[in-house]
Length: 290
Image (cartoon, rainbow, N blue to C red):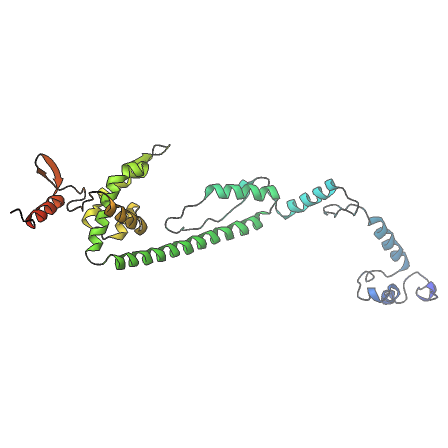
């Protein structure tokens, strides 16, 4: 297409119809604003020269994307600049996380985990607002997860307790737990000495053993109180196990007295339990000695 510059310029160099410049640029630039302030040819030439000079030139306060031939070092510097501009921190201590205001009963706050996340976020150059959003969401997830697990545990405890009461109806809920207690008392010190007798932690904290906990709870006086057993550290599965062990033990005797389980009498210079003496008396009463 023939083009006559004189058809677009006045004698003083101003454009006859500045809006027509868009048409000269082609349909792909129909909506451009680039020509709005260009009123004469001199200005047009100057803008063109300024634009060409700016191409490839690093601009102040502008993070310039590396070109296709950029080195790995150039790319790393570009990423670091972007992260710094977006709010990256120099130390994990700069992050501000919102801890849950009230944790569920039994759930502790994991300080070590928070410290690890702080260092990880700082190492990756994560911005403060992004790190806060992510870790706060993590805390909420942990609380929800704990609550779900705690509810499932309580539901299972109820199922187990109800089933034990079905399996041990009436007097069995008194006799069987006492039998289990007797078996624990007989075997605990040897079978699980640390759990039975307790221990002292490295920091000096004394952990009370099962023997002491059971005695202090007076579990013998309320053997059917499954919540009390569980508070001591004994669940229904352990009760079932030691009830079987107690029944299988040679000479196993039912406890019949206080929480220490020792009501005895002297027979022929030997100390035996009242329950054992009652068995002997019953056997003698049913025996024909004639």
